[in-house]
Figure 1 (cartoon, rainbow, N blue to C red):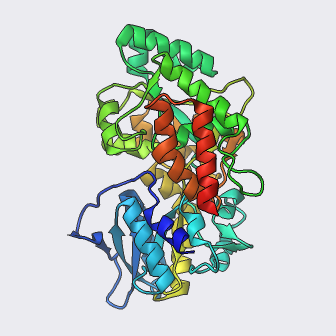
Figure 2: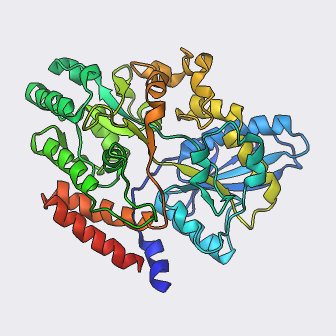
Figure 3: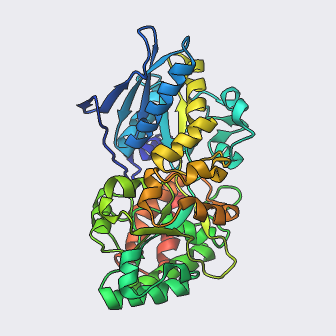
Length: 443
């Protein structure tokens, strides 16, 4: 037990650090902003921890709507933004000890299973979810549930797509619309490298976006049906061999930060060093916020597949918003986050503010919302994101998050992928070692 607790504190996965804005205070505990949402002096103050500043922007909008509609249940929200690992580690200790936990918190999907071990120290949200259950994607509720109890509320579907830099492709004489298979991508990438000296895409080492998409299109996973790790499966070997072949032919290359969603990588994309990122749709907010030079150049498209007919997307990433057992007003916190995450208004704002694909898929067909010419994401990208989403919506596979996931992530994304793409180690040998290490750590 002690060993598992230490592993929880030491596990290192991808770090997402985003900064707050407006009225705020810096401290070792993070950056805190006080949102009053137009509330009066009698409002209940609730605290909210997150690792993504943009989530705070969404809650700010929903807080104003909530307070206007609920004059007798008004809320002030203290939003604290912390680095990914710091926040999850502090939250884990706080909920286990019952001391110092916020009222509301975001928990990233890769970490969520750690918070469901034993008896979860989080409040079940079933009653708050009930009014919205018929309008949201059920799998997005199931992934944050245990034994029929819902503990977290999702923010997006996270449908993964290809983000193509059309300026680079045009210079090389490549049409992204002609890319259907990985063979097509390889041919295009070799042409891009020959004509421009730039890489078609990235070989990711610190995150599993690409590994996940290779498994998803083969209808496989990192774990079996019982949740046991199978990272050295034939499907995993086959998928990584496709990526390694692309690297060997100068089609993809490792990137600063190890994957597209890092501050270092944003700079390299801005400079035009890579023509493609394979990422969940929420990556759009990173483009608009951190890669302004690429506005009007990036087109979205389905991910290439090994063979035509394979699924062209999977749901990547995710954040479950929770209410802790020690919340000041549990029912108020539950009702507010359900309103802020699951209502139709919330899902429209999730698209407008965050550029995420809402879990209420009715929004996907609301053209006045999705094709609004004044929307920042519609303005930024070459084509409309929802034209792509609606094309692939029946093909979005789910990669499971299980109790083994944090350990799997730690081993693969700190050691194994680096060995393969940086050191050139044999893929099967590296995955066999990873499998053995994961099994040992899970004992």
